[in-house]
Length: 239
Ligand SMILES: NC(=O)c1ccc[n+]([C@@H]2O[C@H](COP(=O)([O-])OP(=O)(O)OC[C@H]3O[C@@H](n4cnc5c(N)ncnc54)[C@H](O)[C@@H]3O)[C@@H](O)[C@H]2O)c1
Image (cartoon, rainbow, N blue to C red; front, side, top):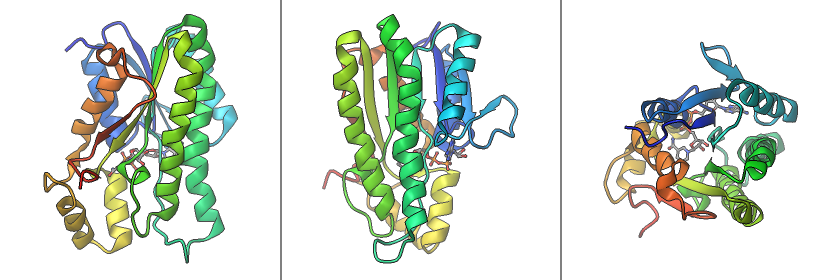
């Protein structure tokens, strides 16, 4: 388990769910990891709201002071607000876009310059299978994740010649506190069962399974992969 031996990594939204599982997996693989989250109240979590440029820049400074350089950024922080296009408020729409699109860009902007200077680095954006297909009631979320997927393509085009890789990960429904909150808001256990049944595998993913996909994109195992969208959705979007 040394696929990230000697590497340094920053994970946003790492206090819960997929980010937490990725922090554990990256450490198990030998990386030194900084976990950042808007919930900075837990031990060893750096307080950072990815929608606030000053927070994100402070995180990049702290990471560089602590580790010298950063090899891997997993821009994982994200939110999903339940609301239909006909009913959601402007502020709900704005908050989803602030976290899921602007937050991702701010994280890339803060960490990319040093990676470009070193001509090395891997950035993984946590998008969603719902950035590829529609879903009633996650209208802003799906639009924001689609934007994040295409943001990755442009950033990868800007960074590729200087040795920096940027990819999008599209998990399917994954059992995390975030998904549990969505299921609750959307109508309860039946929604969870429907989501599981919408995959070809007939079940939700574990956070560890998605962390394994993030590890592939973060590590040198994917050294010829950039600007790509890795779908790890149990077959949700295949049919
Ligand atoms: N769970 C799923 O089914 C699923 C499916 C596809 C994509 N995703 C994506 O995976 C990522 C992680 O989701 P999860 O299910 O683990 O969610 P989660 O809610 O369990 O964890 C998300 C973490 O992000 C943090 N966060 C939220 N807003 C933030 C901000 N402004 N700044 C910094 N941190 C912030 C939260 O505090 C939380 O710790 C998200 O981008 C989500 O959209 C999740």
